[in-house]
Length: 462
Image (cartoon, rainbow, N blue to C red; front, side, top):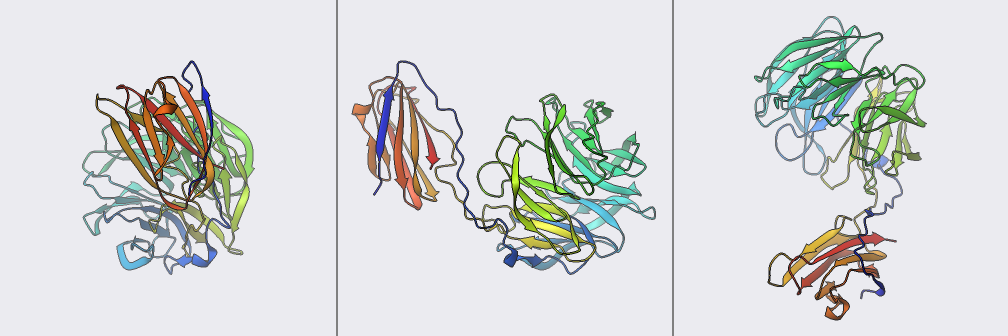
């Protein structure tokens, strides 16, 4: 039984209910500590990243372990690690690792930064089930790596953050890289991040406390911004992501001594600090961990989970994961068991093991994608459309906007909410209180008037 009450307002002009409504989150904890699974038995592991490397539809995990065997492991459909190690590296000190299809053959290749002076950073070519071709072509003494198409030719290029100078390498379209630019530095630059910060169609660069803009050909020019909000950013924890919903790439940086910081983009590539400082962090990652539609923040050393409100502001930590004297080095969010929730992967240094934690927070969607749903009649025949979705259930509201609908019928789970007498061709807004059952729900709409009529629905959970 659906409990329904209505409050209708007929107006002489069209009113659009523009606010986007997101599902509420309910949880006891985000990441289940009892689900902690050791990914590999190696210690002293540094970097971790996840992507589908072998095209089986499930994320795979690449790990670099200092002076230990690196590996890229397949994940089965339950989220467990299989015994298959798709790639195993050598016993040499590697730092950050990345997965990208550098030869555009449809599968992910592996790139890495090596931090000592005795060996070279480089890449492995994925040859369809095995990483046989190893090219140590980036030079030595690199700490961080960022990959993306820098010159607009569709082939991924690479930036190596180094202690002496940072270097830009352009992909020659065969899966090999050519040194394109050397960027002098005044301090150690251990991390790099790429994004189009000024919306001009090319990827720009963050290094240490600097922001450099791309001239379109893969050459970077310093924007003369100093992002110093308390010291020099030396660790590789940095990423570009839109945290305030305004459509541009904001910058989040984690620093092992200073803390983590959020800097908002003004739309032209200028950044300003929000004033929030989070726990010290070798790395950061962001994603929607609680299902409310907003970006959340994870820091490392120890791991703290901060929930975002969609404006670029983050609340206090709702969960802390600590491993005693061993600090978490890098955090990565990926849905490893394909349940629709991002899980947590982390490396731990100097002791401890790379670990996966499942996201067991109890959240679900209230209405269909929690977005406005348009029903538009485009022909002379009556238009009939049905929506079906799984709901977490409970009380809420159905917000309806009608644009000049002459006649229509609206059903929710088989019960009629609105009939022809409710529509007279006038703009209309309605707020209908509902109580949805948990599980399967459906809404059917039949437009019987003129072509071009439109009904817009939004679901709002109480």
